[in-house]
Amino acid sequence: MGGPGDPPEGTPEGGPGGAEDEYRSVVFDESFVRAARLQEFSAQERMADHTPAVRRRPPLHRGLTRQLLILAVLIAVAFGTAIYMGVRHPYGSPQARRSAEPLRMSVIPLAPQGRVPGSTDAESLYAHSPAAEFEVGAAGIPLPATRSTAHFSDSQVTSALSSARNYLVRSSLDPDVLAGRQVRSARSLIDADQLDQFDQSFDRPAADGRHSATGWVVRLDPSRARLADDRIRVQGTLQATETDSATLEVSADTIFVYALRPSGAAADAPVSLFTVRRRLTFRFDRDNLRVGQLQLAGSYAQAGPLSCSEDATSYLRPLLFGQTARTGAPAGTNPFATDSAASLCGTLSTDAQPTG
Image (tube, rainbow, N blue to C red; front, side, top):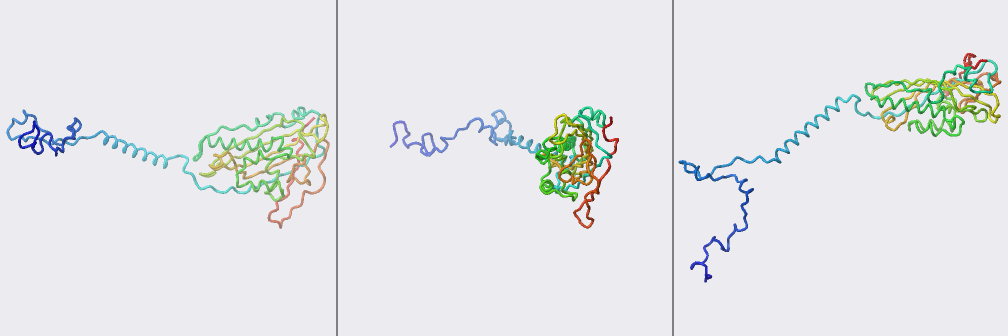
C-alpha cells in the first residue's frame, strides 16, 4: 500500500522516485550539450512549415587534433632537413679507420772538417753562428695561418698543426728527453698503432730504418754531453695539406741548435754548438684529431758534429770543443739483410759552425 503522498495505484513506472530511475545519476552539463550532434530548433525556427524539430550539427574540430597535425608537419620538416644536411655536409661522413703505418726513419751524421770550434760563453757563440737570428725554444716554430680543406674544418687543421708543434717541442726541447731520462712526454702523443714500434726503438734499438730511438726524439748521450744553456735556438716551419678525404698531413722542417759542455765539466768549461735538422711528416685521421694524438709517418734527421763511425741509433754522441771526427768508415751495411738500412754520413760545412 502506498504512502500518504503516493497515488492510489502507487508510483508510476519510470516516474520520479521510481525504483528504476536509471537516469537519476546522469548530469547534462554544458560541455555535454555542446558536444551533442543533434540540436533542437528554437520555437521561432519551428514556426516555419515543414521544418524538422532538430538539425544535425557539424562535427567539432578539436584543438588537440590541430596541434597533432602541426607537430607532424614540424617533425617531417626537421627530418627532411637532417637528411639534406647529411648529404650536403662539407666534411663528409666518418669512414672506417685505417691502421697507422710503421715509421720510416734515417739519421745522417755530419762530420766536422777539423776541430770543433767553441767559446766559454754560449751567447757569444750563438751570436757568431748561423743561429744568431733564431728564436728561443718553441717560439721558433710558429703556427702558420690556417684555412679549411675540402674535408677538414679550420679548427681541425689548426688542431693538427698544434699537435705536430707540440710533438716537436716535447721530443726536441724537453731537457729530460734530451738527457735520456724519459720519453713519456713524447710517447703520449703517438698513435696507439705505433706504440710497439716506439717502445722497441728504445728497448732494442737497431739500425734498420725503423727502430732508432734518435728517429723519434733528439737524445744526447748523457755520458758525453750536457746542455750548457737551456735557451735552445730554433727555426722551423709547418705546413698542412689534405692527402685524402680521411687524412691530414703536416710537414715540419725544423733546425735545433744546442749549446753543449762535456758531462761533468766545470760551469766555465768551453761550450760548442750541436745542430740537428729534423724533417718530420705527421698524419692525422679524425680519431687522432679528436684525442690529440698523431701518426709519425717519416723522420729524416741530419746532426753534427758527429763521427760517422759512431752508432747513432740509441743516442747522438756529439763531438765537443776541440775534438775531431774519428777516422774510419761508417758502420757496415749488409745489402743482403732485408731489414738493414744504408749507413750514410755527410760532412759538416764550416759555414754551419761558429766563426771568430
